[in-house]
View 1 (cartoon, rainbow, N blue to C red):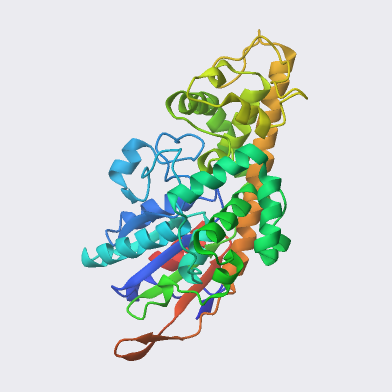
View 2 (cartoon, one colour):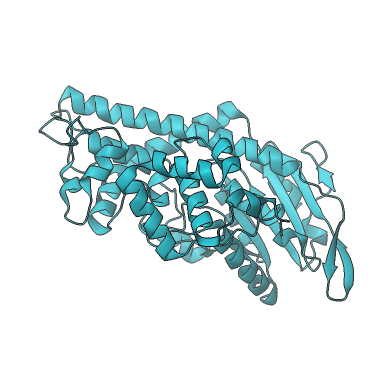
Length: 390
């Protein structure tokens, strides 16, 4: 069954079954968290984060993570579960969510999945190809290969063993190329073949009723919200947070955590001003300069300003014009990257709202059973709230 924001006369709350699972899907900065808190206060829900950035410990400002006091009042599953140098696959997420949904229902609560990582939602609602997780030893071998010979070597290799993926992927898509090579080396089967196998989705569970609520607000309004939230992040000290992360962890620029919007732009800024934190013995300085094109022909860091900006929210009046310009460029790039993220989220949301919502026949040990996914779309978070609460 499918609903739009034009038909809000009937909501879910009065007849929401105990075996329900609710997905609150919306782009960044759209107000998802406030509605999640409102729903939690009804006493019917447990919150499960669907955010690939909130999983990281010590990444708080740039991820707009709820504060410690908010998390104490509104507990979220799947927040602060790994360190920034660790990886967390979509398959691991789906497995964790399957376990958490069962626990919520056992507690007499309805799981409320809230966040903006649309790829996670697609895996839950449409299914996940049975691609195996990479073995740690294989992952390390491929990463060393990439560091020694560059991503182009892996891309060329992929052309020989998996021409379908080679043609589909951009030659600079480090993350997906690396993953495809890992899968082939581990299984001797191209990832493109794995991806053609039948998908399995948690939302097809005949014992559960899934409700997918997609909120797609006005773009102009959302862009204003994004700009306001970024201003708050700079004032709260996002630059200092990234410096602190580099001091604590043996990070590299290609880690998933360091590819998060905001963090990526701060890293580039720190490289551009030759920040002393990059001299930490546990960091490979050359990797950072190489990632942002700041190496000269000899492979050494390009000459930059000798004076550097110390960790703070904004450069001071005494900083050079070059440093101030670098800070402004970082802010502008972060704003653009966040808007691009929102654009991709809209694309995913439109795709999600077009998923089949008819009765889905599912094979079970006792025969066949049918379930359906309720899909509703809105233009404001208020409409979604009315749909759920009134």
